[in-house]
Length: 386
Image 1 (tube, helix red, strand yellow):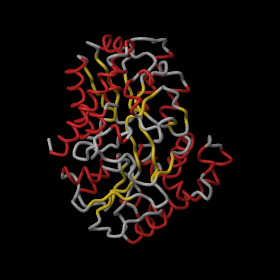
Image 2: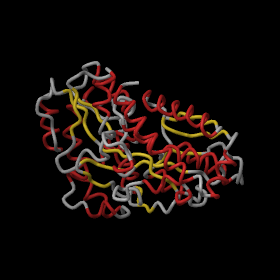
Image 3: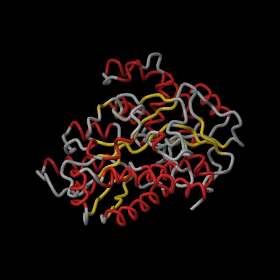
């Protein structure tokens, strides 16, 4: 453990112990804690990051020691199949004893869960640590869809470019400058193939950059509005793709692949949705020392990611305890440490150690309504999906 990490841990644990003492006075929460003992919580979460997997392994040890429950990370490439699994279970009448107790979710997947009644009763206000969440952050809506207690915020994401500044001393900060740079440096940039999350997010960031009026993006998309609003994006991509890695005839399958290509020197920049990932990766030696995070000048696409409990969770009490622990100052401060994960906290700054990383690093631009992402993914696949 680094000295900085130790400071985070000690200060945050002191705060957390104080809050847990307060929470211990709540009989309803004490009942939840009692029910959770001995339960196994199956947590479907993206498994594509060694740092995240290591963090969740640490959380599992803490939960086993302090709450006598078992946390099992079910590593998935995308959460959409988990949503489909829950829907199939509901259609088959499986109303209890389901295989998923907790989900890492946001955006169109949350909307699908909510619209299809795949989440249990609202639970966020039952968690003592929800009182520490910073209400000024985008935590009440998920891609414009009201949360209504059906999920709890876990962290924040901001789309950025991880740029090797030795190769790109003046990084692009707009769609126009990115295109100009790509034309001058063919083959040195790419983005993950949509509908992969980071690839779809890149499309939304560029659409927000290029749309003459972004207001329609924050209401449900219609066919009539979609075509004219998306037209500048397709014009941009038609010009960009011949200058991409492999001339845009193939795309990386994941953000992890683009990051590896950056580390190998094949790309000069890669897409991230974590504003601290560049710093964290430099500290851990997985990216070159000159890599820096750069956001678009108009603002970085910003969202919160959440934890949700399915309607038929077998270990519902245990899932609540896990979610509450992941919202504790100790867990949030550790998560935000660039040497560990670097994912920004959703807690108020005064609930964290004095030297904790600020939640928002870049000027924020809110996520569009999820229907725009679905239409963008479909149209992109039809135009460029090969």
